[in-house]
Amino acid sequence: MDNNPEKWRTQAWAHLTKLRQESPLIQCITNFVSMDIMANVLLSAGASPAMIHSIDEIPEFTPKAHALCINVGTLTTDWLPAMKVAAETANKEGKPWVLDPVAAGATGFRLKACLELLGLKPCVVRGNGSEILALFKGSVDPTSKGVDSSHESTDVVEAAKSLAQLSGSVIAVSGAVDIITDGHRVVGVQNGVAMLQKITATGCSVTALIAAFIAIDPLHVIEATSSALSLFGVAAEIGMQMSNGPASLRTHLMDSLYGLDEGTVLNRVNITNL
Ligand SMILES: Nc1ncnc2c1ncn2[C@@H]1O[C@H](COP(=O)(O)OP(=O)(O)O)[C@@H](O)[C@H]1O
Ligand SMILES: Cc1ncsc1CCOP(=O)(O)O
Ligand SMILES: [Mg+2]
Picture 1 (cartoon, rainbow, N blue to C red):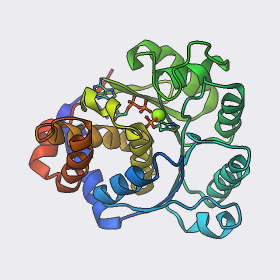
Picture 2 (cartoon, rainbow, N blue to C red):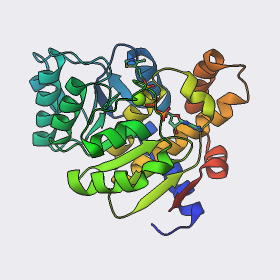
Picture 3 (cartoon, rainbow, N blue to C red):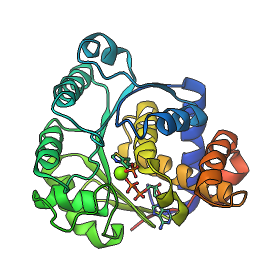
Picture 4 (cartoon, protein in one colour):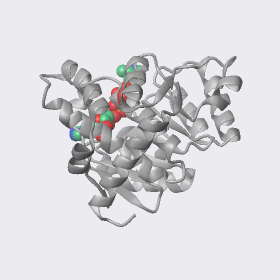
């Protein structure tokens, strides 16, 4: 894709239209905090969510899903084997899966689990600046703020590129500017509002949305990931105009995502090659 902004916008609208038409089934193995908002964001966008995480069901269910989202936000020893079996099943079935390494640098247990999952070759890893840096360094961050970031996405571009080259996954770093890279190309998305950081699990939700967009365009992972991040940001921008704070934005974000129309998308999507 050349750096014509119009092409990125047209592509984002084409992705959303296809998502609404095909309504892919997205399996989410995710943290307790995020389950509700993640499922509702997927529904608002046009996808079909299923929060199914029992290891007893994965061999039967994961092959039916069009994409899988794995999120370690409230990880326990019990859940990790299910996540690994699901990732392996998705790989075997040729289904794309994405990893959200929530608070990767917060503890040794979490970091080890995230690195093991990264070894199972997710199609995309989406994290905030601190999470991506922790994965790149492979070390616990003594100054970790848990699920929140203490690094700007734009400060970890080189780490993200190296991590992408080492892992073979596309790395998406969220922030004021979302960075998407396969280790060679770097794309920037400038949509969204800072208030998204004041709603829990918006990061988790946009990771699930990336899974949905990859489900409908698995051969263009960077493009699908960029569209998902941009359209989530556009919905937040529109929603913010009707909101007084995080609680009302949470509601308006979903209404705006559901109602996104061609004119709004073509006017607002802001994606560029960096
Ligand atoms: N300062 C900001 N301005 C605009 N959008 C932002 C800003 N910070 C985060 N976002 C958006 O909020 C969503 C969640 O990102 P982020 O807060 O980085 O994830 P996490 O919740 O995992 O830490 C993403 O869509 C991202 O683009
Ligand atoms: C608060 C919290 N604690 C464990 S998982 C979680 C949700 C994190 O969501 P996000 O990474 O999208 O902010
Ligand atoms: Mg997060």
